[in-house]
Amino acid sequence: MCRVIRYYLGVTVEGDGTRVTGVRLSLWRAAVGVRVAAAAVCLYLILRWRGLYDHPAVALAAGGGVVLITALISVLGLTGRAHRLGVGFADVVVTFALTLLTVPAQTSGQQHGGMPTLTTVWAAGPAIEIGLVTGWFGGLVAGFVQFVASVLVRDGWDGRTLLNGALLLIVGAVAGYLATRTRRAELHLTAAVATASAAAERERLARSIHDGVLQVLALVHRKGLASGGEWAELGAAAATQEAALRALITRQAISSSSHAATSLTGALTALRSERVTVSVPETEVSLPGGTATEILGMVRALIYAGAGTLVLSYWEVDSAATALWMQSFYRAAQSRPLADAARAALIQVKARPEYSHPYYWAAFTMIGR
Image 1 (cartoon, helix red, strand yellow):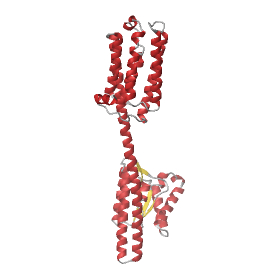
Image 2 (image 1 turned 30 degrees about the vertical axis):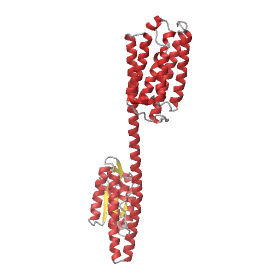
Image 3 (image 1 turned 90 degrees about the horizontal axis):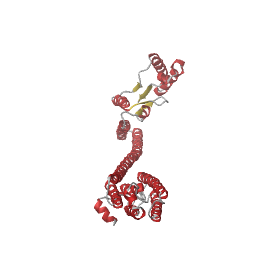
Image 4 (image 1 turned 120 degrees about the vertical axis):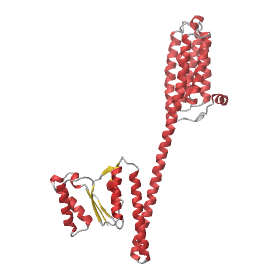
């Protein structure tokens, strides 16, 4: 029977027969809350008017059916097992039958007057549930079925019946449409997260491979220089490839975001090799991605052009602090390696109380062969 319904509705029920999770489980729990609240209203009206009915026992039996169906749907919905077309179809049929019990329970005047059917707003539940399972069209059909039940009870329709029918159609269609759109959004988000995770994993693996290749190139470079002759040429070629690979890795890491803050300190440190020494301040220096890319491009161009040592500033610096740094640097460079001289100059500037802020002493870095 459910296959026939699927055929005529033209729907494919995703997750039919399995427990649903995520956003669909949240929607079902919301639907259960609506069904329970509507059942409370329905029972209140039946108990309040039981003395007015033509056959109160029939009305109370219908109320018992409402409680039973609500309890069953609540258990299935809260545990994610109500997302089945069979469950929704059975709910439509039972609710239709409980609504028709209004005919023997009420008097003719009550049926054609202002008294609602026994199931009242509770009858909208199947339209919502079918909408969650099949989409807007299924919710529309389920709402129309309940509208037909109201017409049979009234033995026709009037303005109030048509209004209730319109509300049933709208509720079923809207519930189905929102469920479909929400599910699609969840699928898109899941796919985006999976894509991002896969990209991060590929980058992690690539980093590991790159590190291994860099280590091999560095080893070939050292062994080639030590062996001399043709092996020295191979070592020089390995050093060139090592520098090119380091530049490629650094460029890819920075170009991933031209607006996000990028650690220029880390990017410059990646240029270190057997022939290149990088001296940077201990304080992290972050710049916009585009600016960092420009600085790195200039540094690489100068190194490849044969520059022996580069002293760079990350930003426009104070003239007096720069003069002190340069004097200290050149004085220390007379007897120390350039990297040590750069650190000594930084300490000298930082020791002055008027230059204690990182603006004065953290701007300089040194890159050299």
